[in-house]
Length: 90
Image (cartoon, rainbow, N blue to C red; front, side, top):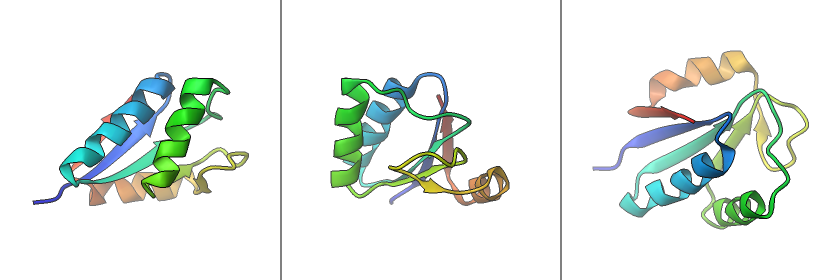
């Protein structure tokens, strides 16, 4: 049975993205939410973003200047959290 998982990205960006990719191995639905900031410009994060794009995972952010994530308000993010079986903050 497939679960729906939300990963909240904050301080531990690289680890959160890597873990999001790993969660797809069990065929669970994984959505990624980047909160309050832009992702760091590091090679390891860029590599994870490419994999996330290849896997067609949904990414959302309340920070309007993200070019890799759909912009949504913090209220929309909060309201969507009840739709998930698991919410993992990083």
